[in-house]
Amino acid sequence: MANVAVIGAQWGDEGKGKIVDWLAERADVVVRFQGGHNAGHTLVIGGTTYKLSLLPSGIVRGTPSVIGNGVVLDPWALKAEVTRLREQGVEVTPDTLMIADNCALILPFHRDLDGLREDASGAGKIGTTRRGIGPAYEDKVGRRAIRVCDLAHLDDLDPQLDRLSAHHDALRAGFGEPPIDRAALLAELKEIAGFVLPYARPVWHMLNAARAAGKRILFEGAQGVLLDIDHGTYPFVTSSNTIAGTAAGGSGLGPSAVGFVLGIAKAYTTRVGSGPFPTELHDEIGTRLGERGHEFGTVTGRKRRCGWFDAVLVRQSVAVSGVTGIALTKLDVLDGFETVKICTGYRLNGETLDHFPAHAADQAAVEPVYEEVEGWSQSTAGARSWADLPAQAIKYIRRVEELIQCPVALVSTSPERDDTILVRDPFAD
Ligand code: GDP
Ligand code: IMO
Ligand code: MG
Image (cartoon, rainbow, N blue to C red):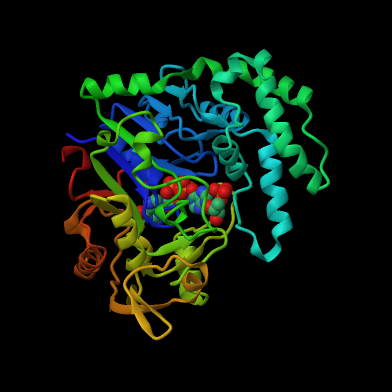
């Protein structure tokens, strides 16, 4: 029996939330291990939609849910999300939600700085979610962060505030902004501490005990491998490692705690924000994918860029993240295309490449090499078994498996929880 890590194998929004919710039925605990409320994970259950940004997707089923130490936590965003979910009838209590006491906080000036930098960058902007993710991780690595456990010691915060002021006041001055207002910040922290602290605990302790007791742990990644700070399309990436290797370190478990790595990939490709995207389509096919797939960002509402499936990129994600099996989502969006294209390699300066080069200029310059396969006219929407799929769709899946060098473990055919085809049970491995 394996613990399962779910990670995005493209640029995010692959359908991780849907798959985590589906798998959570058989999990004992669900853990977020990186990112923050830049994530937007959508669950659709019996026609009701739930949008989660910071809370693990297990919370909707009532599966104990953990925010691990690798996450950057905006306590005000947490409160807003908990309030919203409670209004939808989801129970959130210290028995169902546990937050690592060593999580770094996203503070209001992180959000400000994210926006100020983006506004100042003009055409070179990253297109971040403006949630303060990058600045908060910078402060964590810079050893200046205020952490969840500090909320219980707000009278002893002067050394951290000194370090934060020394760093941020200079940056803020450069943008014509006033220094950090320490009194106002402390007052805000005092107010929110009472909300956060009941959920705070050494989650590593609980998770290690769960592991020792043979419980099933489901790790929920955010973003995708191509947004990984090391392996992604740098600098157009997020500020954390999104690969499966982070699951253990971001939750306080050893590396052998992760068994099955389930990479989530759309049957085509999307990206929100700036950066290279070799198979992007600027024509009516791209528009059709966006419309059929309802490709608008969950967090920011931005239109997602759309293109054909890029097997080179997903093969690379499979390799750097050690993916055991793929969940191929949104197959139904490809219904009705006469032919479907798959990118199998790139051309760069007259040479053929079988991988995505590291340099930003090369990433922007590669030209996709396509293979065209037959499409299918029948609907796959809502299919729940392999037998419901048209032969051409099965052929497409088989070709994708071959090209990415990884088997498909699940296929998703609509936003609804149960419109899912199980090929190989990740927990049974
Ligand atoms: P995540 O960030 O990886 O959890 O993905 P998002 O929730 O941001 O985006 C995925 C979108 O596709 C959501 O609106 C889902 O409801 C929807 N979705 C997930 N799986 C499928 C599927 O198989 N078919 C269709 N048509 N939509 C899906
Ligand atoms: P989920 O978990 C898609 C993108 C942003 C931007 C870049 C950096 O829903 O798949 P950041 O705010 O993290 O500094 O932005 O990363 N981005 C995402 N794109 N899905 C996400 O999360 C994303 N989280 C961040 O659009 O390009
Ligand atoms: Mg999303």
